[in-house]
Length: 297
Image (cartoon, rainbow, N blue to C red; front, side, top):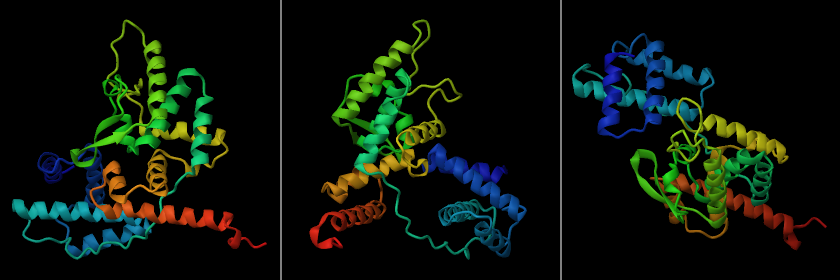
């Protein structure tokens, strides 16, 4: 990593309060451009355009290409402000067109089947997975927010959590009765499992790994196992799909779009509006399957 890229990432962290996840993604994006162009400080417009056009040929999605373009353009704006360059070779990079992909979502019945499969796992492992699924589905937490929960936040059986999301913004995340009962059951098993001579982990879902807490990768693996046990396609089940289900089922139940936006922590309501399309598609399907005038017979 060049000193200029390091300085840019430091600026993003200090001045713009970028999350570690965002900083890591930008570091990868800039490293890719640095390698492909022979150096961002020496690159010209043609070299950047060649690199950018090659992203799709390498199989990267439009969303990933858009993020890489954003990282490079922000880097050059910073370089101009610092006086490192007198031009911006990224100005001609056109944003890639992104299709409107509807999020995957599970039905209420499929969520129930997933929870039943999770509960069939052995002892504490089953209680932990049920708590994870119930929390994600009840509150719409991002996987990073879910796995960063501290045990002290749930010790007193709260009706909602204060969650720090993207950009360090705080919001309230509700917990229904099922989620609270699942958390209490997991806490009892977690406390019983802990050795008295060892200090308690600060994390609600601790792990013996490097970070000290359950990782998104491991959570995804556990969901894959539960999906198979529930007779569901694992490709349709992920931590983020549980968040999608939370939003879609709220809208199907008549929740206001602005309320769902607040609960999800979306800065722009346009991000939340995609769930209205999912809910409408599902309601249309229900009508076609159940309304007497929609039947072929």
